[in-house]
Amino acid sequence: MSVPATAFADNRSNRFVLVPFCTLAQSFHAEGLVKYDWGGVIRPIIQILLDRDINIIQMPCMETMYHGGTRTGLNRKPQGMKKYDVPEFREFCDQQARIVVEQIAGIVSNGYEVAAILGMEYSPSCAAKIQYPPKKGFANRGVFMRALVNMLDDQDYGIPILGINRRGLKPTLARLTAILDETEIAELHLRLARRTS
Image (cartoon, rainbow, N blue to C red):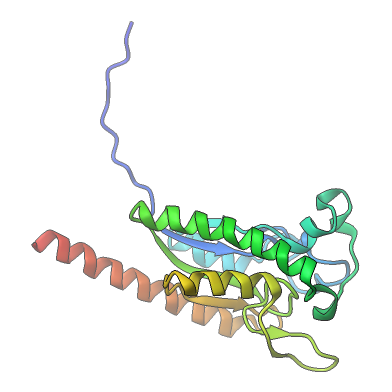
């Protein structure tokens, strides 16, 4: 007995956001750094993405991978930018950034949109713009994020980059909401233009 072919509507979302690995798995932070309300997932960030039906791509955790993967990398101690901003780690991050850029190129070439890329502020690898000094943050991208942004700039993608600041999450949530709502409005205008042409 054959099953009749049925046409199903394809209801997939065409928007993506790339997130740091630890956004969905806080245990990938170095020991002692998970001090906020979310022991597993940074719920407020992920909830915004879920509420808008956004595809979530989890970028690799550079520090865990560099320190031997989950076998040994999950038990690492915090290390600052000086320990990571070295030639070997920069080369490692360049290799991983190329893989992420290839993913983005595939997404975009298939007619989808990367609405934003999120970094993790104060991370020596994934900070979008803020690093730790002894007392307060200073402007500096993490090693991986710097490589990724440079490669994206070279290809002129124009994807918004936003850092998740767990110390002050409300401004991060407001900015993420604004970015996603802007891209949603732009997408609606594009759909309307296609229908009228």
